Image (cartoon, rainbow, N blue to C red; front, side, top):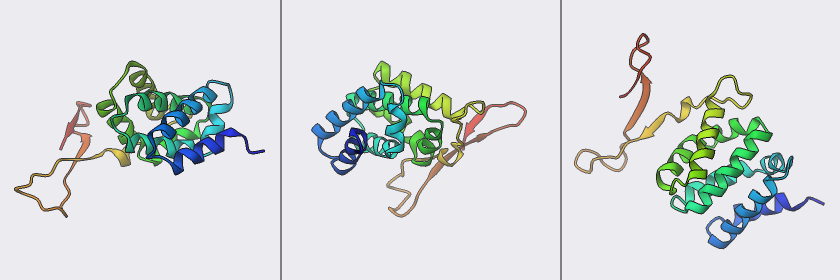
Length: 168
């Protein structure tokens, strides 16, 4: 018997545009992840990329962002490899966007902040480099750019001695 977790994760992946499936599936994973050991099973069933894709494709669904952030945090707390999975699936960008567009409920802010701290803390077993995600797309001016051009901002140290950062 495979258990319910892989079935729920696969269902979320297949039906990611169906609001009722997304809502019910994420709440089911949240309930299951509250039981010790189940969050790591969600992670091993492919839960990280599926949940991140849901967050990315439903940017203003505040309840989804709250529940999904809590499930991601629980997976990270049980399985240190989840930090690398979050980073590897553009999770930093998606989670920051979640704070900006996802309604930013208190539970969402708390979970996302904890996730980002954990994966960027070099002393954490879940540490993962987020440097590849520090390129942030900038809006294009319709007067100065065509559709094939891309513009980017890069966060970088402005001075080694000052320790400050600057956007360039």
